[in-house]
Length: 191
Image (cartoon, rainbow, N blue to C red; front, side, top):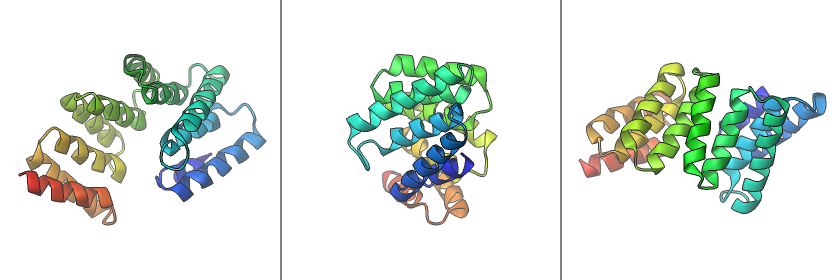
């Protein structure tokens, strides 16, 4: 399962395919392991429209999220997978409610704050997105993805004076972060 999460976190086609293999191995060892179903659900959420048809990915995402909830209704990650599935189906109100449920169950789940921020940003609620991502960074300060996300949301909020140093901070952590280079350049252009 942990190898699956590691591969998922690469956010690459190869990483996602490797992650599926690891999650499936975890389920061979324990068919009732709800977290592995969460991993599969999250994986398919990111694969839709990138490496497979959106409709097919969304169906798998929802199926695996529901299976995880069926196995462990109090697992925050299962609610997070469902929230992501709801948001992916454009059911933003229920997706946001489900994110709130996630954070009630586990207020220290950094990834949930980041996913909720992504949703809020998409709805144009930039200040809320930034606040949620700051919480994710506070909980997991060494995660370059959350650091990059903060500069991304600052950019969208037209807070270029904040986005520039944040993008630089991310590049210190991960010099190969292509999106951080793009955000830095775009922020300079906008400024």
